[in-house]
Image (tube, rainbow, N blue to C red; front, side):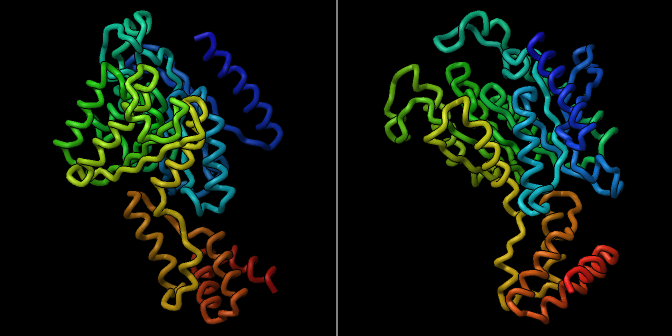
Length: 369
């Protein structure tokens, strides 16, 4: 707890300083948890439109990140870079809620276990509080975030290591809580792999239509060839071997479960370095349909007057919340048609721009003369 308090104190100073300096790194927030009967801290990142109180009718997807004190700056910076800085074209603008664990050995593990070759007695005696922590998220945090911030029903959960098996436990037992599950180098060896086998059984016997999961796998054996890793028998290799076995099990039942499943192996990253790159790849994969393709607008059959808005209508149906054409996309389409001397389709884009954003279009067209 002392370490966590130091993190929040430092972040509070950074955020306070940067607020005065016109920079925004995030918001330190807290709630009273009915589940734990105490105040619990949160770190929240808000899109610029929310901070500026613009477009109060728009609702944003929410990215929930476990071990929030460790991953907040990396994840919120990534979202800002790939949504706001990228003109809302790589990822949708999101609200990021980072949830620190006050006792991760207890809160992130699915059920109590005895000591084993991997889990020492001092850790084993704390395990088994995941269901309570899940209730804390669903009954306390969800309600608080929805009451205070403009959120949609689209939710993504990210967890690493013990946080990874927590994500798997939620997917397995509480699939309705999230749309996307991003699992990073999970401890699938937990309870001699009995837990991961239970998850596979649930995935096989239930339906997960509309749900997506991405698993990032680190190289924790220093053996880059996973086929060689699978042949190992050492305790040292069990972490990586158990994840590879679990992913293989998911692939075998994937079509029957309806779950959209993706995985990626990182031969140059270990358990500590993998969270950032796996989160990046996971989000890009899980939201891959969101990215607007500028090569598609050059196809002769593409009609800007209808196809641009149609793309975002389809994305809205896919993600379960309303998305809109951004001014950045319209301006880039306009510039592309201007560069290729396609004046007819450039005029279609400008007509659409004037229809959707008359004031912004007037300024843009005037400056382009």
